[in-house]
Image (cartoon, rainbow, N blue to C red; front, side, top):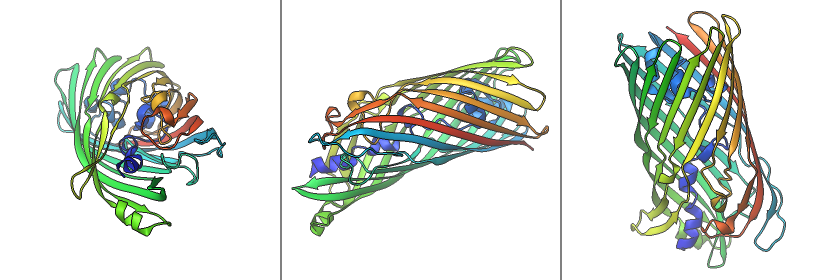
Length: 416
C-alpha cells in the first residue's frame, strides 16, 4: 500500500514548486511586463516602475510619491508528448496540449514616506499551472491532472542609506493550493486517486541597489526559501471495489521546501536613446531534497521520495531604445537552465533547458500614466522521458516532449 501511495504523492512537492513550462524548475518569472520586454535582463537593477520590486525591493526608492502598477501575463504554452511507448513496448497515442493556458496577475503599490523611506505592497503569483493527460494514457499511474495555484502578498520597506546606496526588505506571505490525480493498482485492483491540499507559510526578501551615477546602477537581491507544510486529503475510488476506495482514502500532510534565489543585475544608459542591461540569477533547487508523506490518522510515514533537482542558472542580456518622448522599444535574450536532469524527468515535469526571445513597448501617455506591453517566445530543448530511470516506481513509459511557450504581458503604471 505504501508503494502505491508513493506513486500517488511523489509529484506533490515538485508540482507545488511548479508553474507553466516557461522557467527552469517551473518558477513563474513573469511578474513585470516592463522587465519581460528585456527578457528580465537588468530586472534586479532596473527599478523602472513598482513591478520591479518583486526582483529587488530596494528599487522602491526610485518610485517617488505614490505609485500604482497593475498588470498580468497571458501564458500560452504548447507541450506535446510523441512516440509514447508503454512498458510492453506497445505504441500509445501522442498527447497534445498537456499544459493549459493561464493568466498570472501582479500588482504593486508604493508610497514615499520622506526623502529616505519608502513603503510598498505587492501581489504576485510565483507558481501556478494546469497539466492534463488523457486518463487512459500509458503513464496514468505517474500523473493525469496536475493543478496548482499560489498567491503571495509581500509588504515591503526600502531605505535610502546614502545618496548612492538603497536597501530594502519584504515579508513573503504565500498561500499554495494543489490538486493531483492519477491511477494505481493495489492487490491487482485498479483505482483512481485524487489529492488536494493547501498551506500558508512565510518567507522574506532582501535587496540592495547601488547607483554609481544617473546612468549606471547595479542591484543584488535575495528571496528566501519557504518551508511549507501541506495539509490535504487523499481520496481514492475503484469501480471494482468500493471498499478499496474507503480503505485508501485518508487525511495526509507533507513537508516541502521551495528554493531560495540570488539575483544580480546591471543597468546602464549609454545616451539619450539607448539603455543596456544584464542579469544573472541562481535558483537553489537542490534544497528540495525529499518529500515525506505522513498519515494524519496515526502519524505513520506513507512514503519518503528522494528528489534529485539541481541548482540552476539564468542569464539574460537586453537593450532599450527611446524612439521619442512617448515610446520606448525593449529587446531581450535569455538562457534558462533546467532543474531536472534527464534521468529524473517525470511526466508531470518534462523540464528542459530553454531560450527566451523577448520584445516590448513602453508608452508614456502623460506625466502620470504609462503602459507596458511585452511579448516573449520561449523554445525549450526537446526532452526525452524514461520513467524507468527515475527510481520512483510505477509503469515503464518512454516519450519525447516538445515544449514552447508564448507570453503576452500588459501593465498600467499610474503616479498619484
